[in-house]
Image (cartoon, rainbow, N blue to C red; front, top):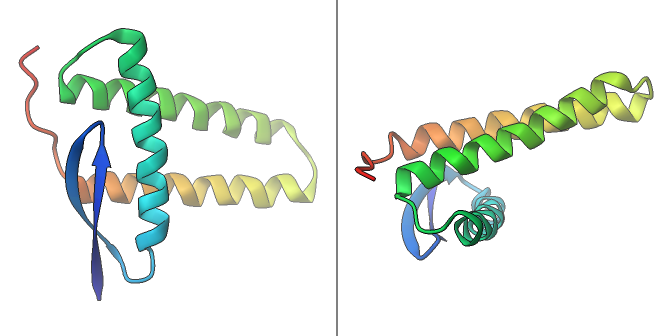
Length: 108
């Protein structure tokens, strides 16, 4: 059964479907995204929603890529578990992005 949570990103509210029991995790992720998006808006100024989403996604993808590269250099068993956790987190983020659908066109 799917659950639904209400999240707020830079002042806009979104209703997001998630798996039952994942509500708190989704809300925690939304708080992190909101914090990052707010910081990004402070540094680049007012941009359209779609452009902000793309810039934020690129920044977060860059962070994930850095972590993957770092973990690829390690040879400790804990590194493998951490890498698997990051891969799982990346899949969850991608699944949530798919549930959000295509963002509205930005005319800026």
